[in-house]
Image 1 (cartoon, rainbow, N blue to C red):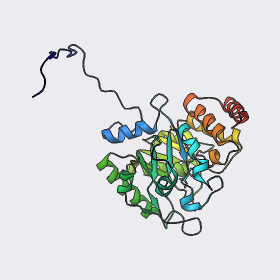
Image 2: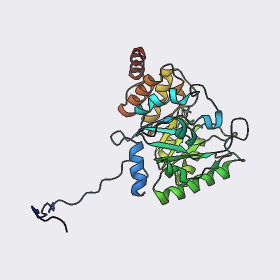
Image 3: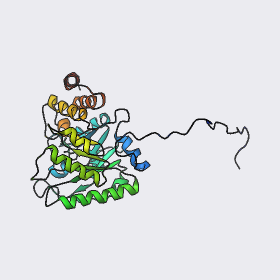
Length: 294
Ligand code: R5P
């Protein structure tokens, strides 16, 4: 029996103070389960409502991508400056220390490479997402590509079904079909299809024109990929224009790990995304950080 000595009568019932339930801060995810919301809250910063995801999953289709020849050397020192790490299960298990505490967005599909039918991917064993304690799973959806649209959309649907069961959000990654232009019209279609099939957030590319319409019509948050390496100032401008147009952050790879000073770039991108730093000031921050001896 419990020790009753010194027992204090419960009395702090907060009478007159209604219990509050705060609204969830990410658009389109209010009606999801507690587990999905909790995991999304680990990926997105609640104060800014945005995220800086560090993408290093390129090897699963591109092999030893420039800048990622040694993921342990290139990426591990950057992880603490990102809000989330996006990688494959192979890299996660082989070189990412399990002691790190950042959320992981795990690539959950694979099967093709740049040498063959790109994007004709299959879903991995989704339970692996649970085994590695991932906070989200990412899947390609190749809208408009005859060979892979159906398979990749089906992958997304299956992942969402699993995610709803176990409280894991899904990131729909728009893979541009070979015959489609990379314009706002295409990305409105592709992002909307990901969201309508249940993705909690969607990764796409920034467009010079009409990007705000891509964001507006997508009922869940959008993060942008950086794409091919740009001069640092241009990459910071890309991130700035995207978040100012409504993106909820970035999922960037090459513009970080192929930068002359990846750590300085991580810090500058983070300041753009979370603090709305202008591209000019962010480039100054990058230059100052770059000058700091390693
Ligand atoms: C592409 O297959 C991967 O999902 C990348 O993670 C994505 O494209 C983001 O990387 P980057 O900023 O280099 O485009």
